[in-house]
Image (tube, rainbow, N blue to C red; front, side, top):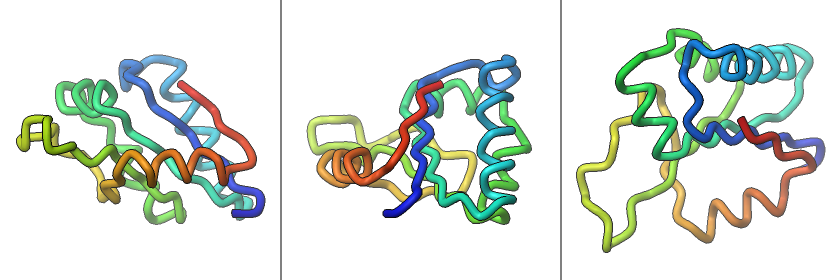
Length: 107
């Protein structure tokens, strides 16, 4: 994955300046052809369920890949629904994604 950036949303409020900064960076990078992936962690998904953010719906149109953590066998099968189209990845796939990216930004 040459020149690939991974953004990890850890649970910031969707209307906080930090979350908006992350979305602005994602969209700006995508506009310039930067390959980007947004990992929506379970806390971020829970927050977005309470306060949806319409900007997330635009990410796929700009070529931003969204991923979520696939629930494990020991976890409840009723995982928090994702507000955008996202690929559920297992632990090993997420680890591989992290090691293959050139830059990781945590918000």
